[in-house]
Length: 193
Image (cartoon, helix red, strand yellow):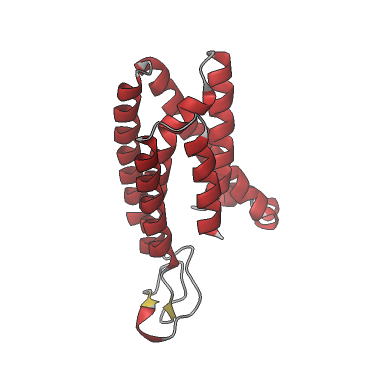
């Protein structure tokens, strides 16, 4: 249940950041709210769709069970959310790059909280650890119980929060539209690797 709570906290924090940035940038409140809702829905749908692709054998043997599983793939959320945002901006004649730059630090914040949720759930766990760095997950988590593991979820969360801070700092220098989004995609991918 903590995973869902962390996702909720991440979405709330991202929304607050997005709304504050949108106000500063003079973005239309109605369009911001429509786009937020669209990106949330398509992002979750895309994350689930990519999960189904990654677990196709499970899906083919038990479609409803796999659809109801807790699994998501973050890249599906990013790809589908950005595609939906692009189509929305194009339809409304809004500058996609500038709007994406307004939203993208909030995405990194939400992902940071999501990774904390992964830690509490025991999913996305790391390799076995040697020494004091290991975390032992309890029985019932998604990670193997009783084995010290590298807490990569927490490293990833820290990286996401640092990425959000970097994007916010760079934004103060008024970079060219699209730079923040491109930098996010590059640095997030490197961090995930």
